[in-house]
Image (cartoon, rainbow, N blue to C red; front, side, top):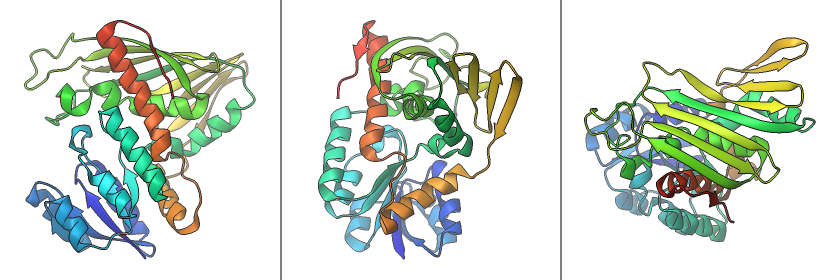
Length: 320
């Protein structure tokens, strides 16, 4: 039985708690930590887990096999480093720390400890994403178009750029990561951001419209449109343009548009469950995960490069 601890009890933890409840024959949540005690108690109560407001105390009192880190980007202090030093396997929710040097240090610690790591890019686990990856192996890909056109989230920390990293980093990163998964590594980033609609929103101190261009090492070029100024979740997904065919990847389906018409491949799995199964399988059976910490660091470099490009007006090259 894998003994699991959680640091952070935000909305995303509900997905993992639900998945692990279905996997209770393999894993047990024994400890929950949050700096707000009421939130920690509320999250821990249905699980019968121990409650902590300090990760240091949790590490000292609990014997954990795995740790889920579900924190805002700015709240990653030394939880991952401590877990690695103790040989505790790590599941980290996206995005990684905003300080890339800290993320690089964690990646080195994870590698040195020989622990399993996974990062919560659940789009990779969609059944229709896997199908698209299979089909693209036989395609001549020209370009990609990505979208994350959305409402403004309520979370106070999300609205502060220094805490969230902005919408490209905290939210649209799913589309950038899925692009890397499907199309390979990025070599060049150019971006432009602006504040157009949310200047009067309380506590809002970032941009609200973003455009990002990428060039992949393969030669594929891509453009991403991102915003948080709309009345509803308007469009989220990725379009891959190939010779005589377009693939439109959405959360619920994959559309295939070619000379014969438009067909669709429906979502057939619970990606939130499957990413947790893959993590437990990696711990117990040594099987690979779709996104480990080192791989997720590559996605983090891309979105941070977009922020840098928007600030400087310069093209940013991605170097290993």
